[in-house]
Image (cartoon, rainbow over all chains, first blue to last red):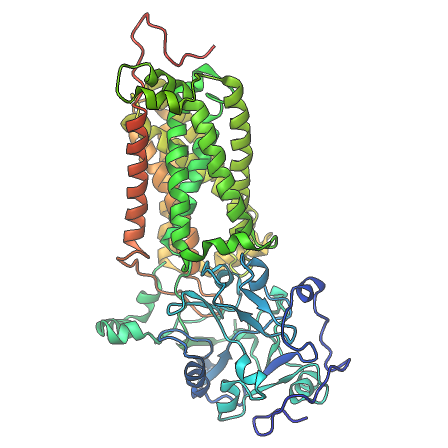
Length: 261
Length: 370
């Protein structure tokens, strides 16, 4: 089954043993899963070699999911890397890793955030009290408080689209085909093949979260907290709309602005 | 490191999600627990020499303990949904346990406070005043009952230890933040809470009691002991981090080592601990206002640094997230508002139960023990 954006469909890959050599779901995590079809285990492979940093995924996600200004469910972190006198750009699309053992879930005091049996981590924003404990617990800074709903928000793998047999918006729109989405339970899926053959890496493996977003071509320097000069430009609707001078200030003295504790 | 330089060009800023409200909560609940613990020798264990200090400490415990949950509720982005905590069973979440423990603690504190102050209510009921009947009603027709005070005190002690356990663990379990993820954190929360409570006792002794010199000296000694513990735990944390024996501490240090702001914070914190310690040891009488203020400030600053400072360390990005204290409810207004609520509670309690006057020579002290 080909799960590229051209002919993605549901209802094919029923659960098959040995789809990819991934460790089994921790029993505690498995026991609390609810909803979704356990026949599937949705996952993503990001081939960073193919990412051109166009941020089309960032924008598609915002449009698809009505993400408020200044918030992001996914973004392509972009770095300028200078090595041995040569400079290049490194792109790293970030999103919720839909971990096999997600640290955001046990801390939730209301059960508003939970993992579906197909592995997708979701938030019921009618139950969430907005305590932000999950925001703290996520090692990937993938969660935030949505100030329109005043609840925790995050990437859902576009679960509403997946349920309808569509690809997540970021995958659908990806120009370079850097984002590949599919069923890790299906040994014939592209993601399974890539996980099997390409030995992709995950972010912060030492956290023991077992992410189900894999990266091909992930440089170890970007696997954890990046050690570098902080960002020159951070998207900020408030800075642009309310007091434009802050944008200029940030440009003028990026380091000084960042060092506030 | 190879000759590599990385400049982050585009990344997302994650704003702090635990707001200054959370700082206020952890500050106030810490002072309340500390105040309660300091009140126990005088009341629950009926040690006469501790009684006057105990009354001031009880005032701190009650006022801070009642204001704290309001700050916590305000930290929820959906405060109206707080009842969602109580319709589920979520034993894996320390915050859920907290939602059970807080009402337990506040109830135990109120019962204990009432038991301790019942004698004063009873006395007020004997004064010829229109409110005497109300005081008699509030005293439920009884005076000092040491057995009741002890029982209520032990229950409140247990509840306060649960508060200390849950507040510390709630933050310490967050593996994603190396600055928080250490078993030292609950100990340091408790030690700074005790120091802050001793500091508040020193301040209240001056402004909401009769400025007793013995209370001041005793509170200063307690403060010195608490600050000694703070320094010990802090030094141990630092040593384990610098030596690399504890990788989480080392990672936490690495994450802030390059920041001038964090270095200033560290120097400030050391000064705010060492100075009041030295003063309290060298001159425990007549310095209470100074040591008390610095100690309360130190307890607050520790929590501010842990929560707000901790959240400005990106988990994946380079450098630090910016934080500017907003003027509104999520910032200054929240801090000032919480302080105002505490002040109101202090005025209310001291209006109902006026500061006990120093007993005239030869007269039996109204709350003399044994």
